[in-house]
Image 1 (cartoon, rainbow, N blue to C red):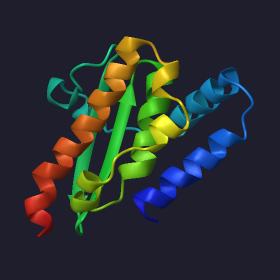
Image 2: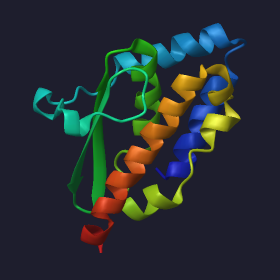
Image 3: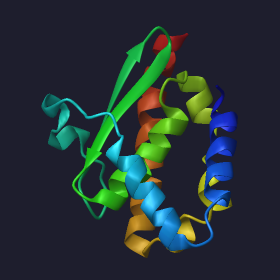
Image 4: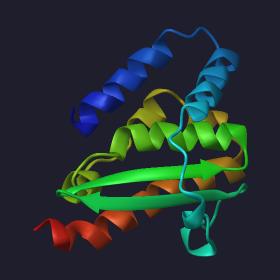
Length: 140
């Protein structure tokens, strides 16, 4: 599935909810299904700078695709990173670099986060793109 298709699927899912309390609950539930990061990758190098809570992100590059695992010490943040990984994980670096996360604005996520969490969200996207950039040359 393309990055665009996945984002449109997420937007449709969020349209089902009537208010932001339900959306927050859905984000938190998404975080509970996040594939666990291997504890050996929970290092300072894997910590995303600029996040209010601790967020670790690891990317594996195989067969031209980047797959991500992540974790956070905050349940809402864990849910947010799980949505981002749903969009970007399993995609090739070129597509990751070219695709903007338009679903964030479409579902109104950024405006419903505190300024520090919104900055953390942007830092997560930036880190995903940096990992994609690092692997783009390998993808050919």
